[in-house]
Image (cartoon, rainbow, N blue to C red; front, side, top):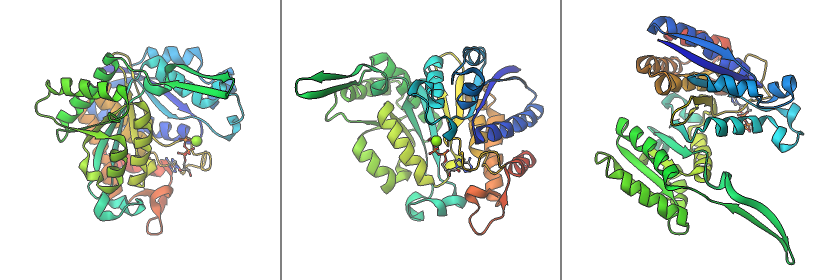
Length: 356
Ligand code: ATP
Ligand code: MG
């Protein structure tokens, strides 16, 4: 098989971690007998510097012509004072919208060996392994009107929470499909006691559930879900929710693992390429020092192999290799603490290659 991959290193440590991922991909290709035609393109600050825009047309075209997009991270202090639509982050939002990646998947895994970094007690967080499926292209973020109006009594302001039944159904189906491959448990998070959109969300979930009799469904209000996530995170298997609730819950979930440098993400569309990126940002404080943890990006590459290339065995072997370097005690500086020697980005990458 031959695949096309767009690689957008972006800024800061994004460049170092995507470079690590490409090294690992080369090795995986030789182990699993497929090949990838890689094309690199600029996004974010790097694109502003070269082309004066955070999302050049050429980058969009390369992504659209690919089977998948692997992205590092965007942003940094150098570009912080630009106007909103010319900032590096606008490039990433524009790319998500252009690629119509409506399903954002964030696996949340508490690594037993890294649990000491979690703000939660070991007995609460141990064994947590769930996935948040966040709707990414609708809801309050994109609904119109979105405006401020001057009235006789001061400002009046409007945001619009807009969804169609079809938009809800397609994200809910992604979540049900995942649940059938996992522990068969789906939590749908809404605010159906207050919001009309949530009441329709719940109706759609109930209707789609008829197609998945093997999946056990829970409806949970978002305030209760936020509480449960720190009280009993092991309760969750697949969590599906709309854009804003998903944004908030996925940051809450990330922090309970204590290992930002370990968390991958995938954003999928119905037809076009998926977009894969680590959850962490460009980490300007350590950029260019060969200190970044590449494992979140390698786990994102594993998701890419699974969802966009359908190389299931390669995906699983890469994931297991990442887990095995952690259980062998190898750590980059972000996770090393006092008891481990800190490996560089390239040294950690070598460890994963050896484990593969
Ligand atoms: P965002 O880009 O979402 O605004 P941020 O800029 O607040 O995020 P990050 O860039 O993710 O945050 O960095 C937060 C902290 O975590 C920094 O101190 C950074 O050095 C550290 N960090 C983030 N990712 C990694 C990584 N892969 N390896 C090592 N340290 C990391
Ligand atoms: Mg940042």
